Length: 269
Image (tube, rainbow, N blue to C red; front, side, top):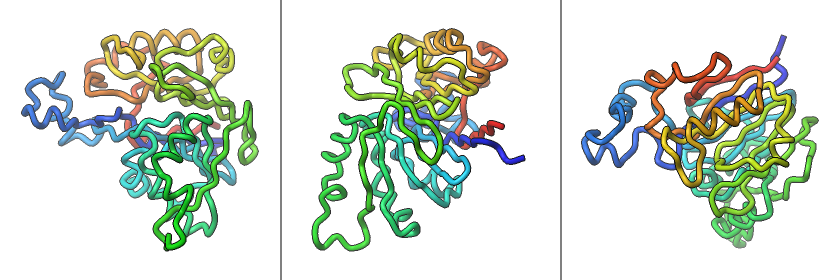
């Protein structure tokens, strides 16, 4: 039997990625557990910028076009993108957008982009040439159609619910619930009204930046607390720095939770 939904974690890292350039420049001497040095030789430890692909019958929906979009598409052999859901407008989550052009050409049509009004405003400002193409655009510009996501919306037969979250001072940041799957890559606080939208999950994919407290992201302790409160059947942590070492910290997780890795495929039956 084919899975009802398939989720591929294309990237599980922060804006720095793993290995970090900073660690390389310091000969890995200040890298916790020398994870970045180990990642040079162990693909399991490498983390590109966070993004996910959700597939169900008749649909292939991307969440965020990360800075590593080009490499992620090649690595995972992604053949089609029907729509993109954007969580927020930070560079590591949007700057792969220009490479959608290859999919627009192959599919011979516009790709729908969904996000909050604030996020779509950032996209238009960053990529004016895409949203207001010049007359001599040629074939190097993707064709897109931007939409403010509704509350909820229906996309290719699945109910899509935006989940507003707090991520520092940024306005318009949100995760998504698609069916019984929720994806929240950049979170500091989940308001009570949003927590109510996350009950009864089969899968929660949530931010887990590092071990220490951080002003705009949840730490491992905070992320685990949210997961325990929401009680999904399964939880996977993403958007991790080099502080999160699956070999050293895996024992801290309950049996229904795990640290994500790039390329992890999760089938929901």
